[in-house]
Image (cartoon, rainbow, N blue to C red; front, side):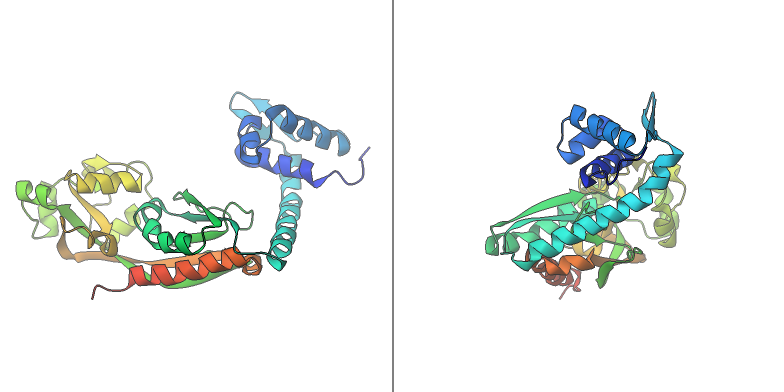
Length: 299
């Protein structure tokens, strides 16, 4: 027999287990004790008439078909709950609280700190959480408040603003070029060490458009971590792709093969309901101005 109206807290725990794949990971994400979260799942299954939502496997909890069927309506509940929280908090909010920003590794480490420093000076009561990941966090599920991304978001309910484009080129550190010479053509790259991806092959389409090899084995130094690639470039391990606006701040990074280039759009995104939040709106406007300045051509 189904018990009327299981509490939202039980559904929230259900979604956390569904997303994270284990009780321990879900408990950490929600800030709950693992036994508490386990009881939530048991209670939800009981209140739904004894439905089985998860089965155990050596790799964690596996959602049943029933769990997948319930996921959509549960996520709708989550979105509605977050909308209520956003609207209520924004109605009487001061410039205080926490704003969570997600960005790619390279933008988050190389660009955002300088942009955010004056914001923190002006609004010291607004705490900033930075999620540096190349995975696109879901703004609708409140994984972040604001996203800085190189791709346009496709989800409905989001407000996206194109700030401009960032150009990419091929660079080498002066130490590397002093030892190995400067390539004069794409054919010369066969005599050089290239820095590129390891197992994440998605960026290969971009480097192919620049005229660079699309075969990962052609890259003598490989890592999927953008900060690792940047560190390898600065250490003089080889030639690598870098954003022009980042490279121009380091006089030891030298552009080679100027025709080897590409460009990516930079997007700033937030949930449309977040415009009700003063702290989010303040940071969104600040990021829009600061990142637009970052994208401006060298004067």
